[in-house]
Amino acid sequence: MIRVEDIHKHFGALHVLRGITLDIARGEVVVVVGPSGSGKSTLLRCVNLLVEPDEGRVFIDGVHVNTPDIRPEWVRQQVGMVFQSFNLFTHLTAVQNVTLGLIRVKGTDKDAAEKRGKELLARVGLAAKADAYPAELSGGQQQRVAIARALAMDPKAMLFDEPTSALDPEYIREVLDVMTALAREGMTMIVVSHEMGFARGVASRIVFLDEGKVLEEGPPEEVFAHPKNERTRAFFSKILR
Amino acid sequence: MEAPDVVSVAKGHPRYLTRRTGIRYLEMAVGAILFLILLQLALGYDVLDGGFWSRFAGTYARGFIGTLTYTAVVIPVSAVIGFFGGWARVTRHRVLSWPVAVFVDFFRGIPPLVLVIFAYLFGPDFLPQQLYSRGMALTIAALAIAFHSAAYQVEIFRAGFQSIPRGQMEAAEALGMSRWQTMRHVILPQTFRLSLPPLGNEFATVIKDTSLIGIVGASEMVALGQEFNQQVLISGTGPLVWIFAVWTIIALTYFAITFLVTRLLLGLEHRYHTPGLEAISL
Image (tube, rainbow over all chains, first blue to last red; front, side):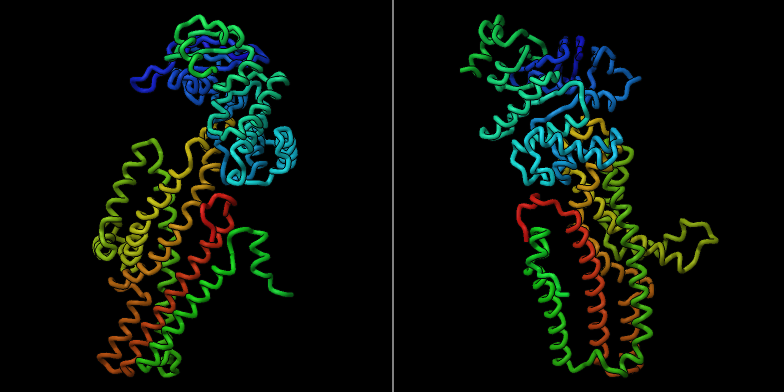
């Protein structure tokens, strides 16, 4: 479904990704963990080409996408993304946020888009908030709108960049619940997160990233219980209790 | 039909159009008029004097039309330059942003009065001979005022563009929107909303700055008013108190134009108001 092959990325003198290869099968939920600055966000952004890898290849459904022949806009329609800081469009209502991509990118007519938008908002439990503006919503509600917005494009896979780290503790649950439901429905997901409960319960694989390299990967039970790498062990001992 | 109660209007469209803002405008207008009436009483002149108007009406009409025309040229021209200049300032292309930075420094750093004089004297030299005329020289002087204001507006729009969090652009791109679509549907609507209040300020300033074009002989209110007053003073075409009447009329006219334009912008502001965004509501 998604394959990244030996990708490298530099930001000036900083070598952020140092040859990462990952294969994600359809329906898999991969949770990426690692210390800050390890390249997790950059890795996600390389998948939908928000960041162009300097070297290496990205495949989506077997198609090599980081070539000049393929429009990055097309790639981004295949893969939805949810951000740490929600990034809702503040001048639009919840339902307008959800339908903007449908109307402008997919060319869906307004009524059909609105209907679909309301369905998606209902799916994330926000049917009643369709006409609310982002500034009138709590963090958890905003993040759920952002998930609905990404889902509106009917993506083949979803990327989550620390979706709960900007949230107050009382709102984390509601966002994780939506993500769990999505995973159970068979959505392919790459999630950068330190929510270990979510990782244990939902992830099919944990990938531990450090200094731009994959140090360890495997099923959560295995990686959490018996980390092979010294650094992985040190990291987990700090965040798992 | 009864006029809608301000409070019920406020219920439908929360946080603007409250009773208090309405009252504030009313107070301002009544205050200004009362002040002028008191001034009249103290100085012993009458702006409604028939003899005065039979002399002044023609001059006033020409000045009023002149000022309106200059305003109608200067505001759109400066706003268009300001908008695209502000946009150019935030692009990554140095070829676009750098010349605009120079433009801003130049036209913001020189007194508008000096700009007008230089534009009038030397502006036509840059045009082909057959276009050379006094009217053309005055137009260039008006453009100098427009450029001066545009320099400020570039900065207003630049701030507007830069106030949009980068994450929103990323989110739009992540949806598969093109750069242009992102600009059109995500960035620009918010830039406009954020730029409106300082823009109102700038328009209010530039309306009065059009009087500087009078320095080089343009027909606008201040210059023509002054000319009229000179005649009163020197040739004795009327009592000296007419001078006060002339300035009072001119002041009221500028007030009215400024009030109208700023109210128009305030209306736009309310139309594009986003609930929940403002930290403090009126």
